[in-house]
Image (cartoon, rainbow, N blue to C red):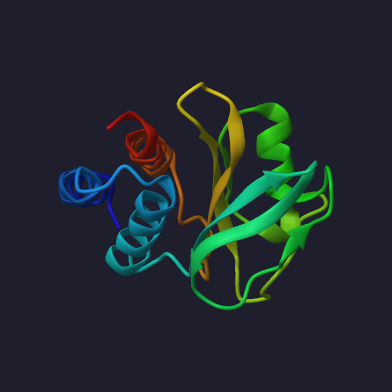
Length: 154
């Protein structure tokens, strides 16, 4: 998808999500809504979900797509790297990422965005996989980060 079309789709989704999120102040419901809309509106999203920090572990949360890894080994893989660096990570080819944790062999590229609560603390990550290489870019990073901020700011 070209960058202009992708940005336009994200902008439309953001408006739709904002309207829905204003109907509840429950963070779990809000996070579930974000995942559902993203997964069904972006055709290159194969697995879309959260991993949450719980007792120094990363445990799967709400998601859409095939069955996920339940727990991710500490300090290994893309999700832990994103948490440890406290920044988003775009992986064009998961096979080339050192220590990548493959929950489904069909995943070829990935983006991970830290999820921060209303105090700015990282509580987990948004993890999105695609079955195609090189599917994620700075447009995805920008809009996914903005969408996650809506969960706690509205």
